Length: 201
Image: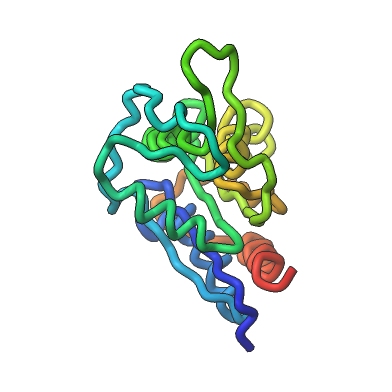
């Protein structure tokens, strides 16, 4: 059964087959099983320059994202995201927030804002969030502690918002400090339920 849905997974972890990657794989596999088309993007495999805060992308009005002056892989990544119906965004917690790889990507998504010089605050070019998103995080701390004592969840919610998506679920993997990476049966079931929601709802 083909649902006609496209789900894109964004892996912000440095570790392939680690906790974040494994959870996103489970979510995408279930979405595919439900008939969705899926794609996974590893940020570490992409050429993503640091945002220099030149604000060139923020100057022109309109609902379409602003044009970045940097030439790298962001254009193709954002095109894949814009063509998707749903997103899975995953990142580990490092030093109390999302890791630097994910933060660098997040900062480059400022192009979805509009903030001309000499104006006090930015605004979203298109505040309507038509996509759905599942957010995946991991921390060495217990999940409840990571949720409340880090800024990581807020950062991923901001990223989803900029990408035009509304979070419909969070999968937080706590105590992620073992070299042997294996998701528990409970985490796998949670991931599968989230994959179903992205594919058919």
